[in-house]
Image 1: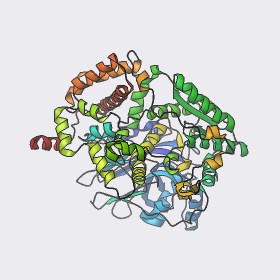
Image 2: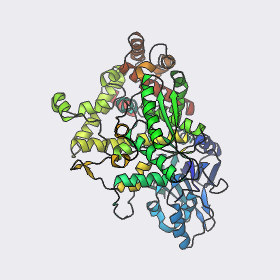
Image 3: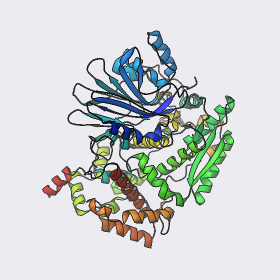
Image 4: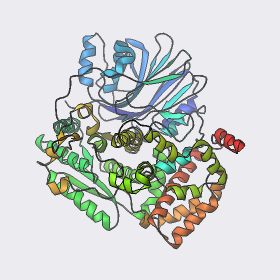
Amino acid sequence: MELKGLVVSRIFASFAARATDSELAAASSRQAHGGRDGRGIAKGRGWALGCNRLASTDPETGRQPYKLPHLPGIVAVLDGEIYNHHSLRRRLRACGHRLVDRCDGALLPALYAEYGTGFAQHLEGMFAIALIDLRAEPKLVLATDEQGMKTLYYHTSSEGKVHLSSELPGLLAFSQVPAQEREAGLDEYLTTGTCLGNQTILKGIRTLPPAALAVAGGGSGLRVWRRSSLARPAAVTPRESALQEEVGRLARTHVPICSVLTNEPGSRLLTAMAARHQTEAEAAPLHSFHVSYSGRRSVAEQTAAGLVAQRGGALHHKVTISPAELPELLPRTIWHLGQPHADPAAITTYAAFRAVRQAGFTVALTAEGADPLFAATPTVPSQEDAARRDGGNWLSPYVESLAAVPRPLRESLYTAEYQEYLRFLGATADRLAASLASDPADRSTAVTDFETGQLFPAHLRRLDHLSAAWAVQARLPFLQPAMVAAPRHGSAGDPRRPATPYGAGRQLLPETLLRRPPAARTCPFEAMLAPGTPLMELAHDTLASGRLRGDGRLDPVAVKSLLADQFQEPSASRAKALWALLVYELWNQELRVLRPAQPRDDALLDSALAAA
């Protein structure tokens, strides 16, 4: 099946609230990068649906919001792709529905009319959907795909008003959505480097979880739950074969296709499979894009990536980020992420999709999801290491391994008032360790569940936002239902140990490339934040300014001392801490531009100080 007629958009909506024309226009303009082919808005009394549209085919059809002449009371918008829309179209036509064009999202009103709130159970693809049902009392219905590949931020008020958007800046265009930072957000960010699960750094704003169904109506606010899945035949295809099938399925498109090639084994295998598919299908050759930072390590990384592309028959593009680019790249990346994210992979992701778009591609295969689905070893200290540390306690070393800033250093950066607040609330590291300790599963399972359920959603948001920044469709073969459902065969005679996909890859790549360990996942912080570098100048100008004095949580004197220490004796750990602080403060600057003079959520802080 060729995936034609697909439209990718960024969406936004309000329900049980009055959104002004200027707010809707602002929400649209802040997401215009993700849909450059036009804007569509439908609205009525107390509701509005809008989208920014990127049409990969048939630009004259598939206009959003979607409406059908014979179903005037149902309006829908879609961000993403529906892969099984051809079979659904045939089924709906057999039921008497008249579909007006070939676009995948055009069938949503008919699908909802046929199945009600169970409509999303019939969908395969990556999607975030907002739908208004006006046939009786107005109702808002939201749905996300089973893996959460598409993001939808939402805010509900105590009066039942609902606002939502594909990106945080778009959501903050609605004046009724507060832009208040959660008081604990800073410690959570510096402890884990991101916002865990479906949480955001802003008060009252969350993202819909994977496989979500949410309904608002009758003044009840938004109710969110995980929808049930339709019973499907048990998968019998091993994961190695399922991956080949999914790569082939997602690579079949009428436009040239490429892959974003990283140093992870799953990405190497994906690129090799996709390149072979293009050759066997007599299609245009696959193009691969690999990004690295300039320097000696870049040569080794690019050499390995080039060998993978060469063996697979792909046309390879080397993309190198120079230190001089970072002061421009970092703020742009943070803007599109919408909230602080300390993983430097965000910059390489942004640069990769920039290169993809500049080369003329609008569809890219990525290997996101390969690690959790193939049970890559989580970052848990080994039994032996745990026994030697903390009397066998593995929790503290594990939680510390997540930190953007080591605990002693981050606590030294906090004001006395914020330290008192954290003693009252409980530091993030302690609360996270307690949560893991209370999990009845064994240690490895508990940590794997945490990483896939809490850390992985942040990685998917990063991919969604940074591919949309350049209006590129990022397709994820590893996260398709067939891959998730495929049985895991044990390896080396141990059924408890999930198999890796290497069996399929041995025909495509030599063992040395297939099993070659990835390079260190951290960027060269010490070199990038050394005295005299462009990024260090940006860090000094940003962090040594007087802006930090108004925060009340970061001690400006301690931050300046950290800067001075890095100037006098550069170290990787201090550079990593400065990176995290710089990301946080640049995000704060963006927030002040979006919504000036917005207070933080200080209620708990006041309680802590009163108790003290």
